[in-house]
Length: 421
Image (cartoon, rainbow, N blue to C red; front, side, top):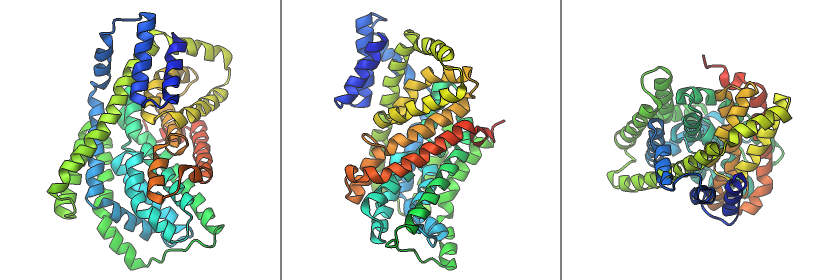
C-alpha cells in the first residue's frame, strides 16, 4: 500500500496531472485497493483538513496582497528601494531584491511578489544592460522571499500541520529571510562588477527623502501586522483581516489608485488563488490521513534512528530530499505531505519543531525557481520574453546560494530561534 500511495502520486505528477488531483487520486486509489476505510471518509477528511481557524489567514493575506498590488504599492516600493540601493554597483538588481523583500512582507506569496515587482523591474533591468535571462532569474529568485518572509502562507501551513504557533513561525522566519536577502544582494553586486555593460542608477539625497515620504505607508503595513501579532494585540488570522482593511483604506483614500471598478477583478483573482491553495490543503489532508493510517512516519522514524547515527547526516539527507521534492511539487503540498513524516524523526534527533519548520520552508522556497515546475520561473519568463530553458543556466547560482543558506540555517539554529522564548 505504501508503494501504491507514493508510486501513483509520482506517476500522476509525471504525466502532468495537477497537484490537487494527483494527491486525491493517489489517496483514493490506495483506500480502494487496500480497503483501508469507507470511501465516505474521503470528503469528510478533505473538509476536516480545511476546517481550521488559522487557515482563514490565507485567503485574507492573499486578498491583502492583491489590494496592495492594485493600489499603487508596487511602484512606491520600487522607488523606495531604488533610493536606498540604486546607486550601488548592481543597484537595479538590488532594487528588485529589496523591493521583493518589502512586497513579500505584504503579500506572503512568492508568485504574487514575482509578478508585481517583476512587471516593473525586469524591463527596467533589461534597459540598463542586464541580459534577459539574468534579469528574469534574479526576479524569480527574489520572488521566493515571499515564501520566507512573514506573513508567509507556507509558514502558516507548516504551523497548522505541525501543531505549532503561527506567531512563533513568523518570528522564526524574519532573520532567515534577511540572511537570504543579503546573500542575493552580494551576488548581484559581484555579477554587476563582472559585467561592465550593466549601467548604474543615479540617485540623489532628495530622491531618498521623497521616496521615503511616498513609501512610508507601504512599509508600515508589515510593521503593523507583525507588530500586532508579536505584541499580542491580535492573532495571525485577525492580523490578515487588519491587513485587508489597511490595504483597502490606503489604496482607496490615501493613494487613490484603487477604484471601486477594480474590486470585482481583485475579489475574483483572490478567490481563484485561495481556492487553488485550499484545494491542495484539502487533498493533502486526505493524503496525510492515509500516510498516518499506514504508520509510515513511525516505520520511517524507527528505520532512520537505527540506520542514521548522526543528526548531521540526517539533516543533510533531509535537505537533499526536500531540494529534489521542491523541483516537482509545490511548497504547500510538500509541506503538508512531508511534515508528518519528517518532523517526528527530526524531533528524535533533537531538532526544535519551529527550527525544523524554517529549514523546510526555506528549502522548499527554492522549488519556486527551480526547473521543471518552478512557478516563479514561468512568471518571470513570461514578463521577460526569455524562455525557461535560457534561464536555467542563470538560475543555478541562485539555487546554490539559497541551498548554502539552508545549510547555514540548519547548523545554526540561533538564526531562527534567537527571538523565540
